[in-house]
Length: 236
Image 1 (tube, rainbow, N blue to C red):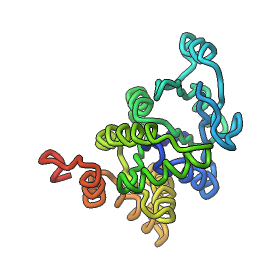
Image 2: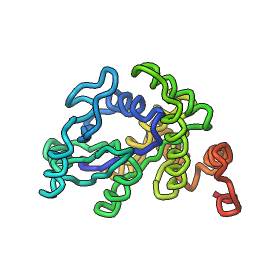
Image 3: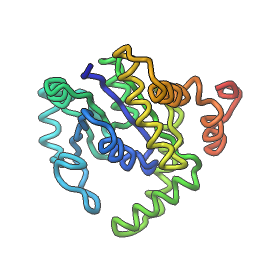
């Protein structure tokens, strides 16, 4: 059964783009929605591959014409998912993966509560800072003020983890890739009613271990690292 909508969100620098690229190569019949943005391309990014790069004027025209499934402004730039991404995927018998921030994910969940939402967490602030600096150097230079701003934003975004069905902690890339693949395949199995076979059982177990309610120990470790563990999260 095609037509499952997968939402994946993460703080900037969490390795989400790498995971998305891997899942696209590992899982068949999964369409990736290329978002629109008004920010400038980074590094080797190309038009139509990572994003559709457009002007603020054109983006605002699309907003007025209700052409977006979701849109948001982040760090002074617009990002949005065109409605036709979902209809095109459904027409081709494929599921759709949306790579969007927490603001956009909230909009999509409100419109489509049946969507499968996945939040990717960095394991620690130090790991996230290292990844951000590495990416910044590759893009031409490290601006420490930008790094600190993104770390503060990451802390705020992580506080929204309860809104997501599945949690991935991207500490070991190979494991996160396997878990993300299991989530996609597990949802397909669950919705199609196919529940037999050893490999199917393994996929379902792995996917279930990533459900928010089952990922408590790993989530608590991240919350503690970011200084977010309080009495309200003690029993997460």
